[in-house]
Amino acid sequence: SGGGTSQAAGIASQFGINLPTGQSEPQWVYTEIIESRTLARAMLKRKFDTEKYGTQKPLLQILTYGNQEPTVGLDTLIKSGVDGVIGMIEIQLAGSFYDLTITASEPIFARDFAVALIEELDAHQREYNKAKTSETKQFILERIAYAEQELRATEEALKNFRDRNRRIENSPTLQLEQQRLLREVSVLTGVFTSLKQQLETTKIEEVKESEYVVVLDPPEAPLAPSGPGKRRIVILAGFLGIGLGVAIGFVCDYAKNSNEDNKKKMSQVKSLIIKNITDFIPKKLLKK
Image (cartoon, helix red, strand yellow):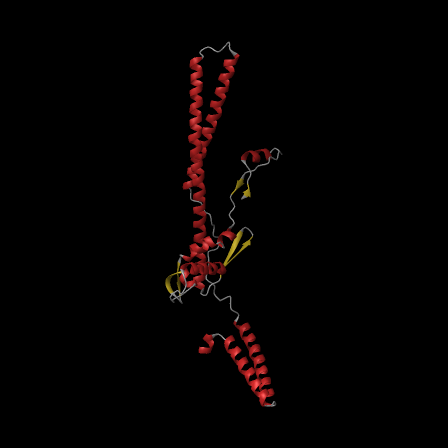
């Protein structure tokens, strides 16, 4: 929560008087909320349209088993999906606002994901505020019932005192007792009135529609992919191929100039190198 200044402190500051205040006002920490597992689980229930998996597919399906049949339990899928959702999100504070970046395999899917994430964040904040307001309302109602009971008991005591003591002008003790009862009635009346006002304020807050998430710029689909860097991949693959080719050529040349035992050893080394290269290359590329 962030520090707040009460109305009395604000008035006092106009006359050069600084009054300390312990009040606070809510301050949402959007970074932690957006990257939380709670919001990620809510996102897994949302449905999205993708070119790869079709229309209106749950996010849990998109991020885990796709169009295949799941081979693990639901708990494992949810845990993997939560990690996937959090991995797609990047949020940074930029001045008074936040920059939200979503990394996904398709541009339209990334935009729709960002829109859904903002909606879930707003819904989360509304539910949180509603729960806190309900707790406050319940507490005030309990205090009102207790204060009203005390007020009625004190008023009844004051009435009984006046019935028993019609003339108290000449008795300082009775006058003091009456003042004490009047003071208690006055204090309890003030407490009861204050609680009633707080109850009405809470009821207004409960039905008030507030903007918990203000969107400055709505999510947009990117025009070009941010990764992977194809040029860098091609350059690295080229250097790797040249290096492996030189190594294999050296082994082959050395094997030709060696005796039979060395040839067998070099042949085994050559086979091992080729096998490691085959394992290093993705299976999709080998099929192509």
